Image 1 (cartoon, helix red, strand yellow):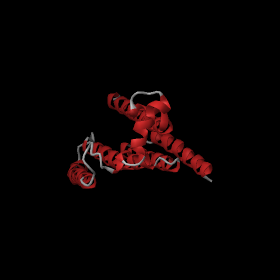
Image 2 (tube, helix red, strand yellow; image 1 turned 90 degrees about the vertical axis):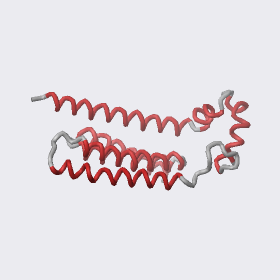
Image 3 (spheres, helix red, strand yellow; image 1 turned 180 degrees about the horizontal axis):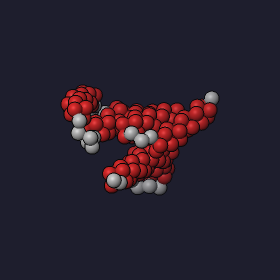
Length: 180
């Protein structure tokens, strides 16, 4: 059942990437890219990388989607009363997202706290065994490249796809801006 769900998610990912490239309006492109990021988060969750899925859903889909949408609305080339209203709408939306992120992160433990939940359980085991298991002297590198290579590869694919989409959107925008 898991592989069938993975195939469905993969098909939806490819379809949303194609739609993002074909859509003409920037707002619709941003919405489709947010859906793409959410589908990526579902794929990560189905692979068992719940932490990566959570970060992708929060940052990739929600925060980035809202910020890109606000940026598109603020930088609208056609200065009409609609874009002026969009600017006034964007300020409280960005403020609300920032406040929600600050509230959400306020309960996190201090950085480097040895009693933090992240330092208990497998984290100490990774640090102790990483050199013997992987022959990599840096525990962070061994965790990202050796223990969690599939997650890192997926994250790299998401970042590459996002950069490619932004480049194509900017190229299309520059082409449209220079044509008479």
